[in-house]
Each structure stands twice: as structure tokens, then as C-alpha cells.
Length: 231
Image (cartoon, rainbow, N blue to C red):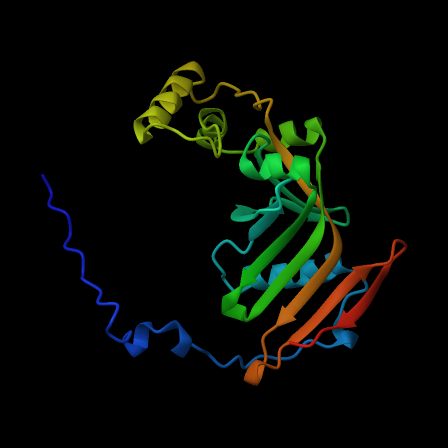
């Protein structure tokens, strides 16, 4: 039997070594600025430009985004999910509708998205309303997922307590027998997509001396206005 690795003792009375002190961790952003003149007419076109640049820069999973929701009790929660589609209608991700985020969106559809592209000193922040995508769209996307991911969507009662890892593995193994490779797996009835329809979209560009550029598109109902924010 392997022995557990020894746990280093941390003395709370001793100062934190400088290299591990979060207050001492800082970098200088030396990047080109973001101007109103250089923006696209609308936020989705501007997002497309930045998303392509992030992907070309080699960022790991540039489609990873933090989704924040607030339930009926007013308690916020956040988690990282993967963006699977974007167009003029908004940003789409998929989940179990009975997960915590699914339940909270049902209670309060107002959500926030954050794309943290740290290696290129950029962030995109989205405030909007989440709406379920059509079932046909969900099924079409589900069929593009790897076979194992399809089984995983059935095996996981996302966000619910589970007695052990073994219970999850056993559920997956049973599904793998029922739906061997090559056999079509139906989309779970409680699994599907959300489209976040943007109301405000902020593009954050890191600049020297923390004098960052922050330009935000705000929906007017018939179009978009752009406002600059203090960093």
C-alpha cells in the first residue's frame, strides 16, 4: 500500500514566503490598447474577433467560461463550463437542467458569463438572460459529442450528492453495456442547452499601471451603445 505524502506544516504565525504571497504577485500588462474606433458595430462580432485571436494565440480551451447564477434565495454560485456556440442570438452551453445552475436559472434567468483570457491580458464579461434552446438543437448537438461523453450525461445526476465514486463508475459501466460503441445514445430528457442572450458585454484589455481599457456594449432595445468604464 502506498503511503500518503507527508503534509507540510504551515505555521500561521510565520510570514508567508514572498514567492507565495498573493499580495506580492503582480505583473505589468504591456499590450496594445482598446479604442472605441477599433470596435466592431456589435458585441457578438467583437467577441468573434477576440475569440479567434485567443484561439490563434494557443490558449488552452479559450471557450471555457465562468457561468454565475443566483437562485431564489439570493445566493450566487459560479462554475466553469464550455461555450459550444455563439452567434447574433447569444452564447450557448449545455448542462443537466436539474443541476444547481439549471435549477437556479429556472428560478432566475439573469446570469453572468466571464471569459478569463489571462495569457493575452483580456477578459470578456457578459450580463444577460438564459433561455433554453430548442429540443431539436439540443439533440443535434448531443449527437456530435463523443460516445463516452454521451454516456456520462446519462450517468451523472449533476450536482446531486453521491455515496462514492464507485457508484458513478458502476452507472457508467451499465450504460456502456446498454449502449456499446456504434449504437446511438438518446439525449437525456433533462439535459440540454441554454442560450445566454446578452444585455451588456464588456471587453476588458489589460494596460500598464492598472489603467486598463474597459469598453462595454449596452443594449438599447433596438441596437447597442458603447460606454467606457474607469478601470
